[in-house]
Length: 341
Image (cartoon, rainbow, N blue to C red; front, side, top):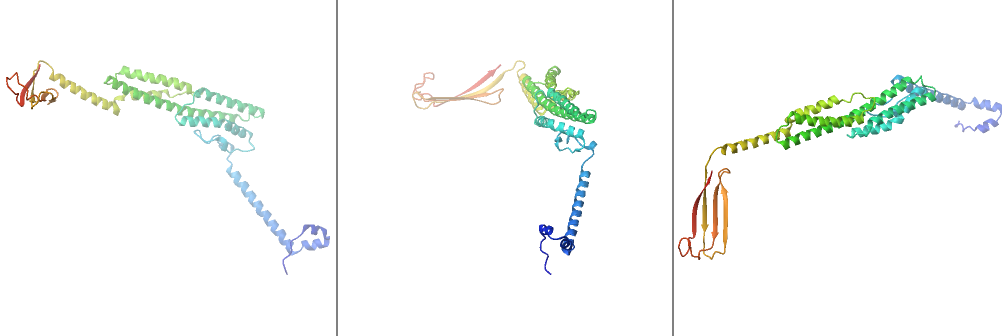
């Protein structure tokens, strides 16, 4: 027997009841019903498995984070239950304020400060909590979402505090480098180590700038600006500036200059006479005195130099009046002695 042709349900409705009953009892229809039930059971098993895995992946309400981390991450990926309106309200609130917080965080990580950050952060926290309260009151969840409101407030203040600390560290580092340069520049100008009064004056100037800059960046809910830490670090720098490599190099150079001056003062102390021998030599070839070259050099130590002079004058055909000679000598040598009192 050949394979059964495909069934046409319109023809099946047209035929009689007896023919329809015989056809439904045929082996082909029995195999069709069996395969349909098997597919339905397999699909039900797959659906139940997916539902079980989703229930295992969704954390409980208390474990659902509002932010991925205090220092970074977006709250948009937080998992929450659809049936929990307070969790939905908390996630919605954090998603609205997160882009601005992320921009401030990136700016501070690049070593820059946000102008007026303290006032802006305080207004952001107050505005976000006011918006949360308004939406909760509109939905009738004012008392039910008290825990979520406290969580939003805690996360916002913690994130603003972290951004403030990063900017404060940038200011401290900039003032540290400025104080270091000022101390070394003043030491180089005075050519000596700075006294206590001069060091404290520079330190107080840096701390005044620190207070004025940090005051603008401090939110209203931040109590500790870590001024003690900055003052301790800058104070250690100004007390130990002589230990810096640049300061040690300047001290060594000053020491060499003092030794050189001390040696000069010892030599010139009291009455002293210095004799400096020298030599003069003159060449007088044939000529009428129209060409002349003269050179003089100092030789010997700097504190007692000797002088050597050499000259050339072509006046050999001119009468030597001083020596009463018809022609002057070709080479004339004359020793000299310099006396320094």
